[in-house]
Length: 88
Image 1 (spheres, one colour):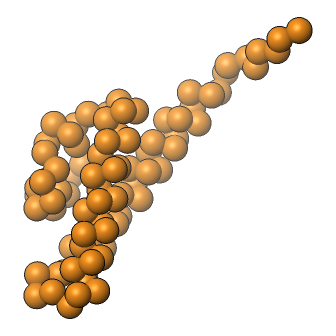
Image 2 (tube, rainbow, N blue to C red; image 1 turned 180 degrees about the vertical axis):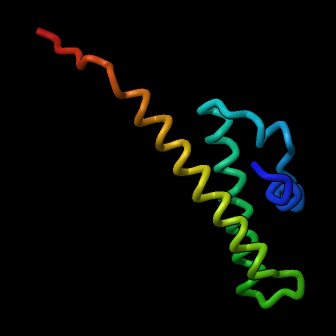
């Protein structure tokens, strides 16, 4: 995560240690926080709140999409090279 993204995430109460946790569980927790932040930001936009920023919301969505893609890649790579088991 780049420094600008780290600053962005700090505005949503997402801490550096949460961003640095690259485990599957850590990524899932980060994605859940990012999704909650997106929902809250969307609600601010729909309410025409003065503190809504379309640029900030777009940046947050890009981080969320990248984290989802990274998690999907990890989860799909875990399945590679594993022989399917059959029970008889």
